[in-house]
Image 1 (cartoon, rainbow, N blue to C red):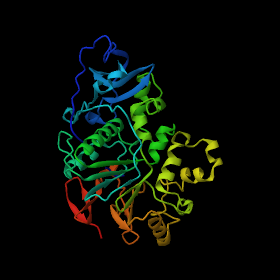
Image 2 (image 1 turned 135 degrees about the vertical axis):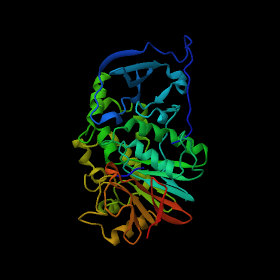
Image 3 (image 1 turned 180 degrees about the vertical axis):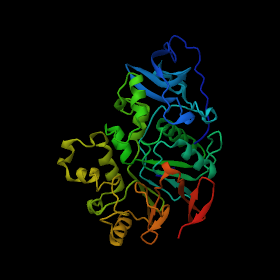
Image 4 (image 1 turned 90 degrees about the vertical axis):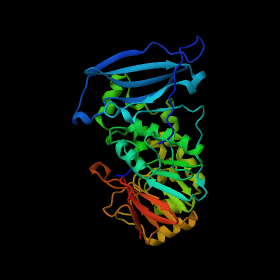
Length: 385
């Protein structure tokens, strides 16, 4: 898998007035003994999970307390949303802690962007926060305090933020934060959805770390409640696209299958049709529309397709058809681990990004000075050819 942070803002919650930013009593309704399957490296914090319930904002967290993990809930008045403290903490690495300011509004992403002068492209982070952080640091996207230092550069994440790794909420919040910071510095962060996002938004949890199910239960919640449209991260995820064009480059998770080519849909139409069905994934009535069926098919969809690397493989003619349809020069994808990743395929028309991050591979693709490079978490750059 691959990989793929900004200005640290500390938000103080003032002693509440009777009508502003009202904080309810902290509720430590549940606790359990710490469970540590992987030695001292485990982070015993989880969350925050920001939920909208009963006209209030709830901030749910799991925190270490002595030998226990405790589920806490704090409630706030949504009228003062920007003052709600969202603090991401690491019991095993407190120097990694950061805070996030909630947005007053979340809007859907555009589908097309002008050509940046520099790009860092990563994929398949899957909750591996440490790897993600080290890549961004080594390649001068952020500094140690998570300040965006990439200027007008664009950071592209080609899907799969969930599952397997142990720091999924922290990874999501860092992306959420960096989006705002990048824009303020003239840069941009593109977060594109992969199959694991759809799985987690729709109850397909077969690759999920058990700790997330256990922690949800400790908070007296079902895991499926953590990323609905009644949550901040759920709303944020649903604002993302399945495919974008960044300058000359088409960016998505899996690839454009011949069947999707044949739909001849614009990027706007494709993303709009997908977004209207983000929460219908795997529902039987979804498949009454042939276009929707194709876009969500487990082998053909833009976030499931593996034909660039596995049989039955796409042909050069298929690739050329996609590039012509969307007036692009290259296609950037993750999803499928290949030993030669990060690399060029189809005579340089496809860039494969996915590497086996869980076994220590950390790499991505850098575009700078009109050249594409393979990069790693030591900052080394190797030209792609």
